[in-house]
Length: 297
Image 1 (cartoon, one colour):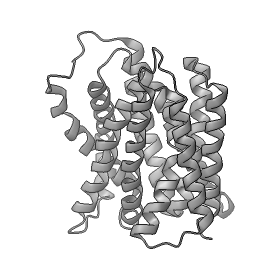
Image 2 (tube, rainbow, N blue to C red; image 1 turned 90 degrees about the horizontal axis):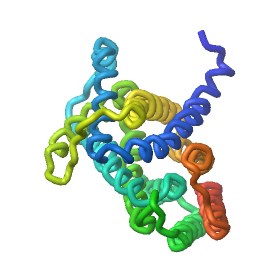
Image 3 (cartoon, rainbow, N blue to C red; image 1 turned 180 degrees about the vertical axis):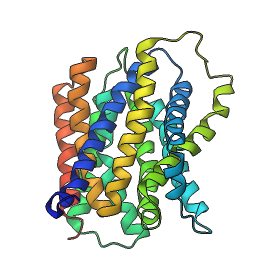
């Protein structure tokens, strides 16, 4: 038995680990995209995750407990993320730096706040709206200060794609919070993997998709890491945590992804921010902080 005091910290620990894993996914994607087509990488990621869940078939069956009519919400959740989300994230990482893509995730708490206000009719104070506007201004500033490089050929377009990915993630979070009252985190994570695998398989045969002719060890390991560690680990941990805490509180931890991503991008990929981009990033984080602190005001 886990002590009651320790049980209170388990969701926090799960969220922290999930954010570290999600931050590392930007680095792994950059490495994988150097050799493999984005569609190949994403399908490989989903396939690896699906195979991992197949090994746990009995547990998956026991955690089912399906309720009639829930397939619409379940499919919508999976369609938002991983289906649409990974497409836009892949296009983002192709065009912008891993650090800037990670910084764009700071918009997610604001988007969830707006969605909660419009859909769930939660009260949002003026400070939250001011913080949201400030964060949007910071993101625009960060994007305008971006300069094309070899690793980030079109940062403006890439940042826009990452923003659209955050919109998809918002739909995922709002739906997930509803479904966690009925299904286990293990089952919901498995559904995401299987639906994502089925969704991306036909895309491999599009004319624009370049299928790999050789196996490159480092990018292949990156794909395995994305499927077995990030998809299973990050989504499993987050789905577990959001079952125990509110959606808005869980989304607060997304603010850590930009910090972790910038550090990892600097250590592994050698990416850096200019002084102006550092100020813009600080504005984004300040806006997010104000938005979250004023959410109930």
